[in-house]
Amino acid sequence: MNLNQSHIMATILTILLLVLAATLRPARSELFTALADMEELMETEAVLMTNLEKYIRVQEEKLEQLRLRSAEYQREHAEAAKDISTYLSNPVNAFLLTKRLTTDWREVENLMSYDVGADFLENVTNYRDVLKFPSDEDLNGAAVALMRLQDTYNLDTASVARGELNGVQYSTEMSAGDCFELGRQTYLNGDYYHTMLWMREAMDRLSQEVNRTTTKADVLEYLAFSTFKQGNMQTALLMTNELLELVPNHERAVGNKAYYEKELEKEANQKALRGDDGSEDVPVDTTIQFRTDNGPNVYDSSERKLYEQLCRGEANRTVADTSKLRCRYVTNKSAFLKIAPLKLEEAHLKPYIVIYHDVMSDKEIEVIKRLAKPRFRRATVQNYKTGELEVATYRISKSAWLKDEEHPYIKAIGQRVEDMTDLVMSTAEELQVVNYGIGGHYEPHFDFARREEKNAFKSLGTGNRIATVLFYMSDVAQGGATVFPSIRVALLPKKGTAAFWHNLHPSGNGDFATRHAACPVLTGTKWVSNKWIHERGQEFRRPCELQPEQPEEF
Image 1 (cartoon, rainbow, N blue to C red):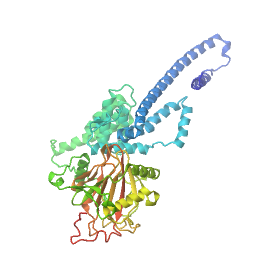
Image 2 (tube, rainbow, N blue to C red):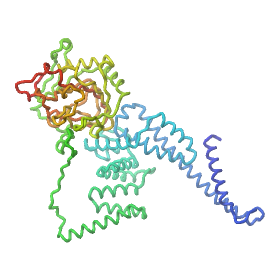
Image 3 (cartoon, rainbow, N blue to C red):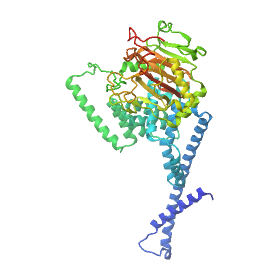
Image 4 (cartoon, one colour):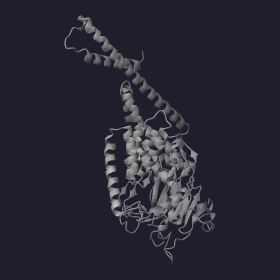
């Protein structure tokens, strides 16, 4: 008999003893002295045997569920092990992995903790002290990222659930339970629009599944209330009635049904008094304001639409615009570049945005990534009022800062930036290394500080950010472009290239056309590094011109 069998038998015996102790408490003792009394024990044994058979069946069902979960985990883990980076770069896989290690694993823990799983549960508890486990916050963040990708890239809900992104099959299908959990997470965020999308998908998948981890009643509860929150009370009532047919004593559904009926009756009475024939004579304001503060990241629906179109590659420039762009070798004013000129590709003329090709080697990239990983922290933005650094939902990535003296490669890259830009590096910020996670993005923003941002860069004492150099340290399978909405420019990540532009006019005023964004990473992983160059020390490198508001070519 193995250890598990011993635990099972011990538990069974414990239950038997407890039941016997409860059963063998007659009004009088010495039952063995009368056969009549002993005959009653036969009935007791029959009840115990029935209960024992039920207990065994429950345990077998429990073990079968664990076997199915184990097989599912092993299958997915084996698939991921073939190419971990590629597997995790797919946001659906990343979400499902996070889900398996949060809500799914809690279900497994509950199954295990009922009986013989206690020993294994203790092991899992010990693992939590030495291994990284995602939190509920991670699960919610992964769900939000998937919703961001769905919206930005116009992804069909059913396609995403099939593991298909923009027509490419990347992962296994999501179950009804997976869709339900995704919808539940959006519900917790008050995002009822996406809750409806994913609860409907969960409902569609329920009819196709045999081993279900959620029920129609569960889905209907969330779907009905989200439908109400989206303004469709009549449909919400129909769904609530359907839920009550399944669970007649559902407390929340009973209360909601009464509320919906009362409000619908009130609405009907008001329409009758107005003589309302049902026509819509009041225009509906469909404008969406995405931010309500006055910070540098405020943008309206028109910019949002253009930003997302650029991310999808839809807002193309005219031939007249692109025909003026050129590629060439440049030496700038660098003696070194006389023998090793750079490959320059013009991306836009005003403002002048260029891409340098082959300016960072694979070896340099790997060293930079290795140095940055241990220091990664959630990327921050500067509060435009206080100047303090803080995390924000519109910037989802992790970053680290590297000094020139930490490695010869870092110092060499600083010198390379000086050769590329002909700007002084002594007042530039350290090399920032950034890795974008699931759906990682940075919404439209300025790199420079505006006039009203009095405290920005005050602690540095080096003035405003005069220019930006952005190195792309990885290719990205889908998404992840750097876009400039006002000038309809999209730069696609290409490993080893670098983008460069001036943030300020020669006068020192900000160039608002340089407002840009990092599109969400749809599939793949995005690594970048950047140098923000400040205006202090550039007086003789970039002097004022006769027309100081016009950006010069270089």
